Amino acid sequence: DTGVSQDPRHKITKRGQNVTFRCDPISEHNRLYWYRQTLGQGPEFLTYFQNEAQLEKSRLLSDRFSAERPKGSFSTLEIQRTEQGDSAMYLCASSLVAGENEKLFFGSGTQLSVL
Amino acid sequence: RKEVEQDPGPFNVPEGATVAFNCTYSNSASQSFFWYRQDCRKEPKLLMSVYSSGNEDGRFTAQLNRASQYISLLIRDSKLSDSATYLCVVRNTGGFKTIFGAGTRLFVKA
Image (cartoon, rainbow over all chains, first blue to last red; front, side, top):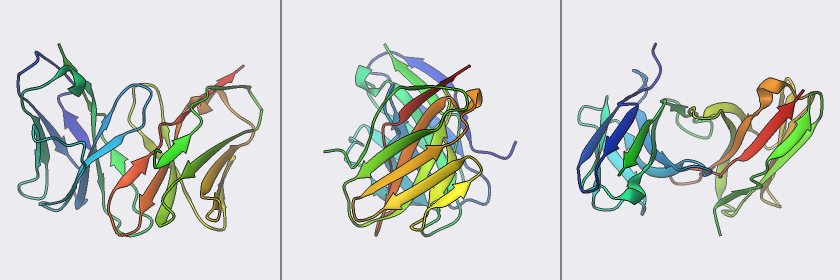
């Protein structure tokens, strides 16, 4: 399968713990996005990478959140000192075509539950 | 006000019906527009791009009205398999952020 893959699929953690998620984009894609989605809402933009450079971060991304894409391939999203409000589906997407017709391809997501 | 707004529905329609969804966006500088489909507990998938002149893909027709800042999706001859949430998506000029609406739920029943 050469689509976007995310790991783990599910994560249950206790409040205050740190968690890290991984995303492997489609291999030739140079753009990578992280989104967060809660029930009944659309995906909310968190951050974006062009190759290894993090070019934009949402105001939603508090200091407890950090994302990296060290070699311009896979990316990690870390949440420190998790809170119950962090419970959500974390989606990664990648794209190749720049400009008006950029199309995002999503992974299956990581479902985070903070107890 | 949200940047992209959609009627959450649900729309309950019988098979074979025609159904239309609208979406409004607040940023007049928005550049690109899309409809994505999301099945329950699955990731969003691109359904179609929306072009200024309007475009069609089989039973699906998308239209854009820049003056009124809305996008529409028309589904003809609805199938049971069309049951999903339809997400309106906008990409703004000068940035890389792609903004999703909250989605419109569609249920097609036999």
